[in-house]
Amino acid sequence: MEGARERLGLVISSDVYNSTDVPIVVVAEVVEEELLRDSPLAVRMGQYVVMPDRLSSPMKKWFTECVDYADTDTMNKVARALRIIQDL
Image (cartoon, rainbow, N blue to C red; front, side):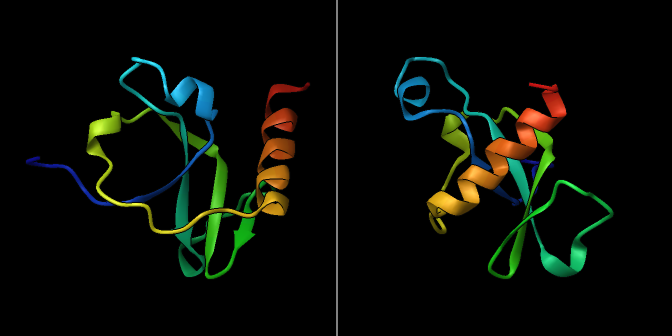
């Protein structure tokens, strides 16, 4: 796609939601640790950092590969950050 840039994202929408005909998934941006900007909600994941305060809804068809899977601890930390953002 012209003008598109490759980037990493952690899918945070549920498997149930993702398995529907809805053409998007909800993702939190993932950046390399050296690109981390000030964010008290950032979640470290190996050499990367998940940014729960930077969400997007890309089209499923745009995904070209699965780079890795987040473990339960990482997903729990991301879920906690999302609850903080939403004051839940």
